[in-house]
Length: 230
Ligand SMILES: *Cc1c(COP(=O)(O)O)cnc(C)c1O
View 1 (tube, helix red, strand yellow):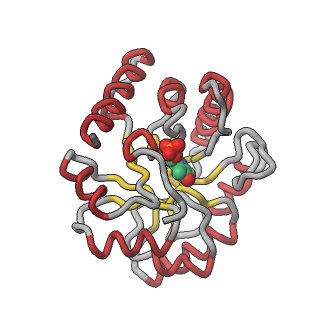
View 2 (cartoon, protein in one colour):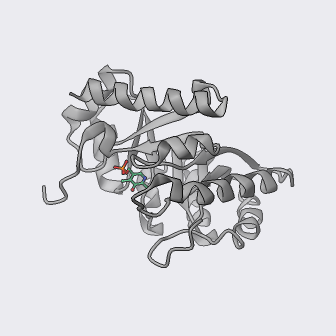
């Protein structure tokens, strides 16, 4: 069952790439494995998945302790500053940095661990009140400030689009995020690369790819519905 679901997601990624004239290699599929048991992650690994997304610190560190060393662990949830120390040694990419204070905490732990931690800046592209993330307007300024921290590296931007019936409704937000990343890239800021755009989930990853996503975060379409009670 998992194999068929992964194949279906792969097929849709390929179609979106074709439609947009992009190469499949430009896009990283992140399997969002939050709430899912280790056995399902192992099964996904057997089908070639290497990038996993988690939104709880404890759950992520537990999983990486048990599973093989060569996986890429993406932290995609809201991150509290006092918990950065637990993920600093091994996190592959933190997608959800939305303040200078959080970036400073990551920088500090990066320094302690002798590594530069890759991060994305989370942007609330649709300006939803309930969501974390910086406004489009505030993002360039915060990027500038974070760029001066030596033990974090800004690789790009991330957004969580609204839940909508029709994924076309999110196209404008993906387009705005892409445009913002181009604008920031043109400034050639030291320590900022803007090569990563993390956008698109189960409902809208095809549209996100058409609009320039380089990472899509897909949970439900791969692993099925989540049950938060267990
Ligand atoms: C849960 C989650 C996803 C995956 O959502 P699906 O709709 O299940 O694909 C992607 N990104 C973030 C930040 C999430 O929290």
